[in-house]
View 1 (spheres, rainbow, N blue to C red):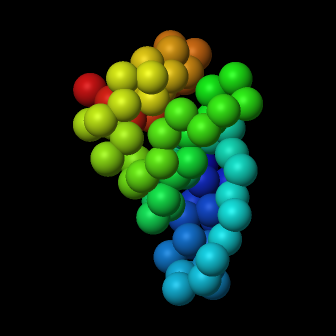
View 2: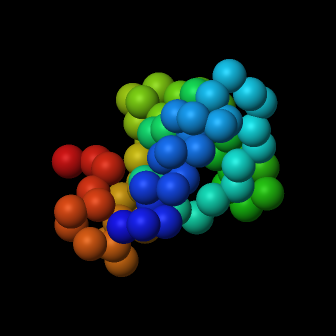
Length: 79
């Protein structure tokens, strides 16, 4: 999709080597970030790369799985 392509282009181009605070509800952008801060109920529940959080945080994995139930299967981040 065009919006996703634009965001990916920014991460790999203009925003490369810069500190960018990016708040999103779009899960597909999370793997592009060097660092993800995961908040649950207003409290920091996880801090790391997307891959690290998937491996080490059951809360983060549960969140991803719950959100993916409403998204198209082609956009799945977890298998």
